[in-house]
Length: 173
Image (cartoon, rainbow, N blue to C red; front, side, top):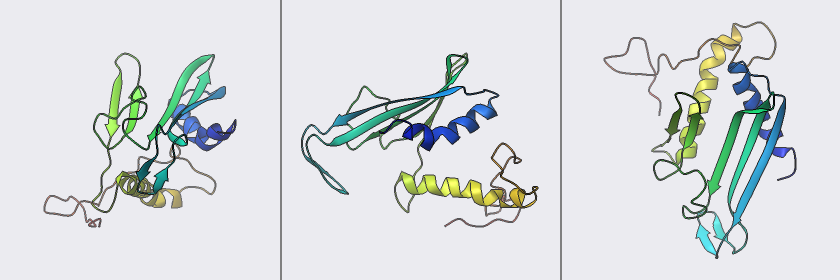
């Protein structure tokens, strides 16, 4: 990775997380490492040649007053057996993890699934739902740029269809 690219790509996420926690980020540090393919192997997109990048791990570290305040870590493997020493999902298939370290500490693994595709489809639908459901709040806001911190809690009210629904709903298909 070129210096600064990870901070540029993930810096907004870092700043929004920090702002929501009342933390001022003074500096964003970047760390990355990769693992070459130990031999040639095939994936759905084609052949991965021996020696080419087969796994990558990076961290974006938000520093505040000289301490690590917010860390975003990303791990991608083209095969599950590559770099078992890196963070692993709690179940096969990968996950999005939120980890809060302190007293008490918490770790939540989110494993999106979809009948219409892999985990990526489900993650995109979740992000889209947040954006679409925010339209009324954005419309009712004064002109200007808004972040999730500027808007009220955006819920999925109205998406449940059935006898137990408390409001009209739409079946998501």
